[in-house]
Image 1 (cartoon, rainbow, N blue to C red):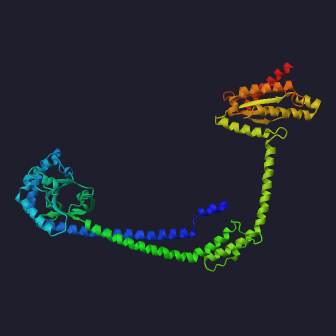
Image 2 (image 1 turned 45 degrees about the vertical axis):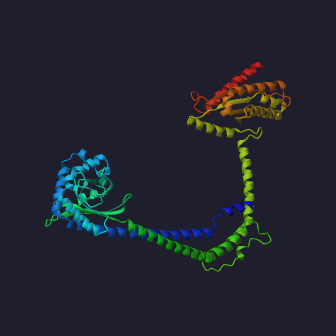
Image 3 (image 1 turned 60 degrees about the vertical axis):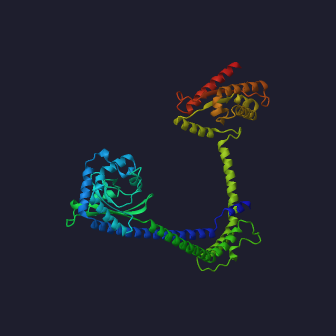
Length: 514
C-alpha cells in the first residue's frame, strides 16, 4: 500500500500534460509571430533607410562643386601619396600624438578656399535632411582605405591652451584622415560604379547606423570607373525608429500573451470535459485493482459498471477495458497455477544442478565440476593471466579398510579426509575426482600461503594418525603440490601431472616409514 502511494506522488497526470501541450503549442505560435513581426519591421526599416541614404548620397554628388572637389582631392592625394607607410596613422588612433602629427600634414588643404566652399555646400544639404553624417572621400584602392576629403561633422570647442583639442573632442574627419575597409567595404572593389552598398551597423558609440557611398563624376563625363572623382558618403541614425519598433513589438507581445492565455484556458476546459473526465473514470476503476479496495465477493467487475458515451476513441477504450477485465478474471486462476508449477520446476532444477556439480558423499565439488574449472584455467593460461596451484591428495589404505572393516568404514575415512582438506584449504576449491583422490585448486590468498598450508595439512594428517579420531581410525593421506609455471606447463594437465608425481613420491616415503 505504501508503494502505491509513493508512485502516486510522482505521477505525471494527463491534465498536466494537456496544459503543457497547450502551453507549448500556443507559446510556439506566439513566439514565431513575434519573431516574424520583429524581423519584418526591421527588414522594412532597413530597406527604407537604405533607399533613403542611397538617394541622399546621389543628391550630395550632384550638389557639390566637382571642380572644387577635384582641386581638394588632388592636393590631398599629392600629400597622401608622398608619405611612406610608416607615416600613415589611421583614425583607430584618434587623439594620439602620432595621429595629430599625421593630421597636420594636410593643414594646407584645410586652408584652401575650395575646401571652405565644399564645406558650405555639404552643410547646406545636411541641414535640410535628417542624416547624421555627410562627407566626401576618395579611395586608396591599393591599401583599401577610405580617405576623407570634406566632412561637415562638428568640431570640438576651442581651447587656447590646446589648439588641437577641437580636433580630438570633435567628430569631424579632416582631409587625409582615413579608415581601413571593413569586410563589407571590400566588396566595392568589384563594383566601383555601384559604390559602397548600404551597410547596417550597431556600434556602442553611435548606435544603429546605415551607411552608403555613391560615386561622383565630373559634369558631362561618361560614368565609367576611370571617371570616378570621389564618393559621396551618407550615414543615417536609426536609433529612434529602432526604439519605436521595440515599443511596438512589446505591445504586440502583450497582446499575443493575453490571447495565448485565453486560448490555453479555453482549450483546457474543452479537453477536460470531453477527454479528462472519462479518462479519470477509467483510471479510478484501474486503481482499484492495485489498492486492495475490491473484496472477493465483489469480484473484479469494475469497468463493467462504468458508462461512457462519448462516441469516440475513449468509448472504444472503455469497451476494450471491459472485455479485458473479463479475460483477466478468467485467466487469473491459470496464472496462479502456472506460477506454482514454475516454482516447483525451479526448485527441481536447483536440486539437479547440485547433484550435477557436487559429490554426494563428501559434499565437495565432483569430477565434472573439476573439468569446468580446468577449462576456465586453461583459458586464463592462453590469456597469460593464470595464477594457481594444484594439490593432489590421495587417501592411503582405503582398499584394506573396505576389505577388512567394510565400505561404511571406508566412507568414514573419505569424509574425514574431505573435512581435513576443507579445514586446511579454506579459501580453495576442493574436488573429489576418484574414490580416494582429491584435488585442491588454490588461488589468491591460499596460493600465496601454499607452502604453509601444505605443512599444516601434513601436520593435521600426522595428528589424526596418532589420535585415531575417525571412528577409532586415523586418516592417512599423501599430498603433492605444484604451482603453475608457464615455463614448465602448457596447460592445467601439466601442472596436475607434476602434483600427481609429487603425491606418489610422498606416498612412497610414507610407506617406507611403516
